[in-house]
Amino acid sequence: MNTAVKKNSVFGAATKLLLGGFFLVAVLLPLLQMLFKLGDADLAELFSDGKVAGAIGHSLLVSSVSTGIAILLALLAAYAIERSSVWCKAVFRVLILLPMLIPSISHGMGLIILLGDNGRLTNLFGWDKGIYGFWGIVVGSIMYAFPVAYLMIADILKYEDSTAYEAAEVLGIPKFRRLTAITLPYLRKPMISVLFATFTLIVTDYGVPLMIGGMYKTLPVLMYEEVIGRQDFAKGSVFGVILLLPAVIAFLVDLFCKNDKKSAATTRSFAITRRPFRDTVSFLFLLAVSVFTVYPIVSFIALTFSKRYPSDLTFTVEHIASTFSKGAGDYLVNSLLIGLFVALIGTAIAFLCAYFTARVPGRGTGFLHLMSILSLAIPGIVLGLSYVLFFGGSFLDGTLAILVMANAVHFFSSPYLMIYNSMGKLNPNLEAVGATLGLGRIRLIRDVILPQTLGTIAEMFSYFFVNSMMTISAVAFLAKLDTKPISLLIPQFEAQMLLEASAFVSLLILAANLLVKGAVWLIKRMLSHRTVFSHADKKTV
Image 1 (cartoon, one colour):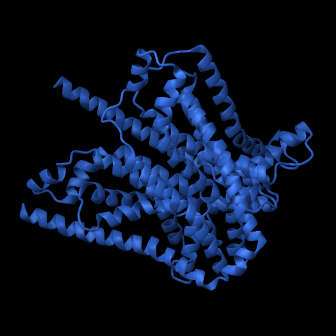
Image 2 (cartoon, rainbow, N blue to C red):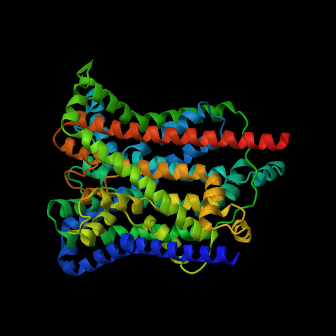
Image 3 (spheres, one colour):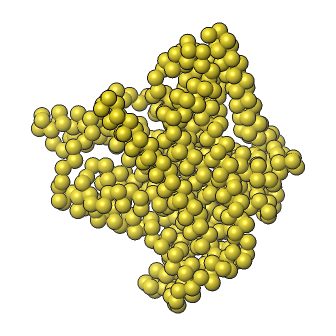
């Protein structure tokens, strides 16, 4: 037993040291390098520039309006699905989340196809001009952020205890009073977290404003132009720090809200009965929201397979052939390789970090946990710039390896928290029993913990892969011509007025992500059936 304990101790110390070194090189040192670069910038001149002040004001205004509307729509949609017997509930869940599987820049392009100067709806209704500028960014940002806000709010409503509502109904308390006395207090603190998370998602995005903003510049677009166009890294670092502030605030608020939340050990689900009026209104609302979110994706299909949309709808595949002739196949391979390696490496590192922070508390685990959730506070565009400054000129510069590392760090926190929560629910005595039996940590992880967390691991793999396929933020600064992921072709083709090619690229990304999501769904379904049959066999025995 002493030998097993000694081996476990050595394995734990060595692994934590390696993980700490990874976070030092991949997170802390690049951010410090960006902060040091601030000294090269003339801050007085920079902030006296009306263009910079205007971009900051535009970002705050657009993000505030978009966040308010997106959260309101998400709250209504989540309530309609979780608190009604609406028809086609499973279909609506899929349609609402479909926009999460394409890049944010694709939402902007979808709006150009529909509401641009020569857009389908612009021509149909005879409007004088397209939706470029403030309202274009607002609508595109809502489409981009709404599914994320919906997921967060739906999760909050799903685990609300119905006991208080049942007691209030028995006592004859009116519905409006139940809303103000039970629902709103329950939602207050979680919704603060949703508010900051949604605002941060929008204020740090440059995909939508780059595509449809026109002359209405936001700070991320200005940062993109300064770094990519003018190679002004000092000015870019100042913009990066400004964009880091709302993300850090959101990160701290999220931590505060989570730590302050009190949840019952068991919750009683809501017994939802059929109410024709409520269910009909919910159905119509969800139908309208689904059309709003999915119609741009449908327009990609029409644009790709029509000879000249919308004037000539003759079926053709010439746009597909043309897109591949421009190198889309090679860039698709790049994206698939990046997504695969990010998913494999990111899942492995997140699993190991969560094992030590959730199962084996001790020296260094607090640092690992902080580093693991820190990426929530680092926007992708800021991370990309910090990597350019730190790794520029090194053997990693411009390689697929640095794109894999940047994406793994950028999307690390959510998968880490998934597996961290799953491991926290396992029997707390597993390690003690394993040590008593002389089992090493590797064998315990392989034979006991891995089999019990396979469903979560599949979700982690999916999260890393899907987001790596879609992202344009960090990789825009890091990719070279031969390592460019396919998502970066969307703005390139749009700038060349090749909207058909951009639409097809968006569909390729969507198809790849749907395949991975479908595979994960099948794996989880198989694991669920295996668990059910296992329990049935035990009962039979």
